[in-house]
Image 1: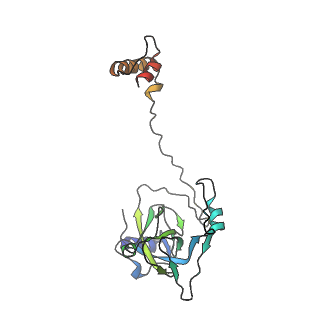
Image 2: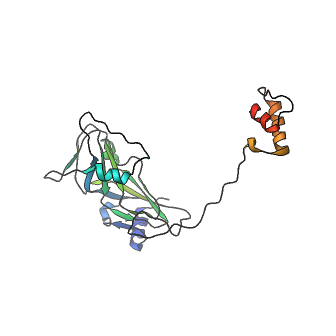
Image 3: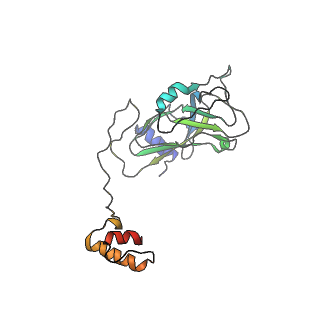
Length: 233
């Protein structure tokens, strides 16, 4: 269930949900709050002209790559940073959120910006229930214009969802908050045995039907039931 503006205000007032800095009255929409770009914009370091770098996915540590190859862009004298067409950028939200176990959050861009080709996330718009921290924006300028942005720019909207059967305690990635994972385990799925692994009279019965139904069966008489079934399949 998506929370309305009044429900979001109630969650913040009760202390169950934390948004810092707190939303102003103008930041609320009917079912969301407006969120803003943080103080910095980042991009990957460019290699020399004509040089292409390759990454083998899953074979490197992202934090090390980020430390070595992600650079911070410097605003001009007016505090403006220009997003070039076709370029990929990263930024932090200005807001830091802390979600209770019963709420998760989702961020989306504004339609007016989307029509300019401005995308604020690629695959990670979701914050899990119980998570606390600052969401990272993965931004691309798909349009034909240079886009001039400043820190504090109203970049998108955040929605909050109430989940069913929340865990009382969850793990967060924020080192400043200590929580433990719930101990409840999901029930095991019922075991599904392959027909190829059936034994005894059951295997013989399967093989007999397979042999009768399939013209591809070429097993000679006396072939063990399991092998006869494999041939028929």
